[in-house]
Image (cartoon, one colour):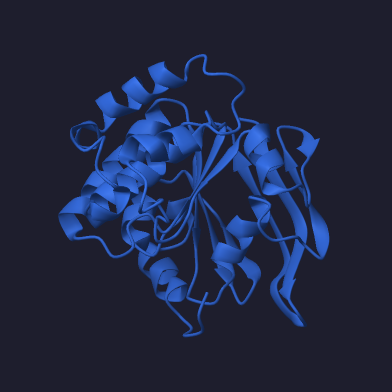
Length: 240
């Protein structure tokens, strides 16, 4: 597999505080790559920098052979990267259908948008049942499904998923990970930040451990004892 995303020596800071201290990683095309780490490690900062929400101080981001470092978010979406943000962040006062249409805002014209909505409604039947409902009235699991479907409306080559199981009941978490595995089988490349390390390691082909803004482990999930990796992933107490 070829590297679809290449991050090299990335430094992102909040004022004088460096949240990422020279991070380098790769995401192979067609893979699920998981990023583990304690709170405050810089995981969300890395996702936001890749998505263009934050600008790096130094380093580079290559996507599909093109330099996308510090490009604005709309250009990142147009290039083929979509973010499913932590806490879902659906448009609460818009309907499910309106949220899905918002996910296609970068696409020129309406060709294929209706078909994609129908395809996603078939994949997420509960969204079809609630198509006219405001997103803010959905359950947490339904909002997560909507956030994923909204991101897929841009037809991304790379899906960034930031803590998709956060705050969800165990049965719903299993359903979300079933969806992640299904997306992978369909050929979607995924970079997954996940606090449920055990579930993440079950679906990932490669994992990175981020600690205090630096990569401290890179390898397949079996190359470091899972209990050791999980123990290290939960060290620390600062806010991410």
